[in-house]
Length: 171
Image (cartoon, rainbow, N blue to C red; front, side, top):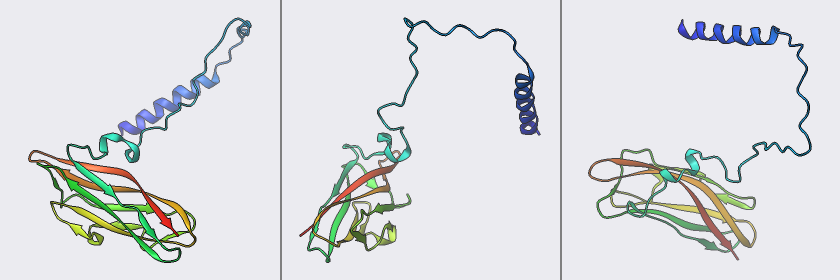
């Protein structure tokens, strides 16, 4: 009911401002000496959960290691993605674990989304995934993705949403 009344009030305000006719002359254009600064796009991208450093693994919480996948063109290569918690921390077994990957053109992934059941190791001491990729032609490629997991200390748990890049080299 309150939402409906709020909507009606906003509509009435908009309609009343549109129905007024203003016959006052418009102000003179600014002289050549005046400069009006119009805000433009910022040079840095907006902060989203995917690129917010607040959700990245901090050095005192542990380490994230991403191996390079190296192999022959047309053959499957493996890169290990591993979280090793620091002293006083452990990997959360309750937090939903997900590794979402996007392969560039010319590279295929055995699996683009991996969950806890796909982990090579999933203990409180370590979380590791073996990412399998095949480059169709020789060259250097980058697989990008987002790694969601959690680490905990004795007092609290800390959800992580870490962007990752896996280097692929095919010869």
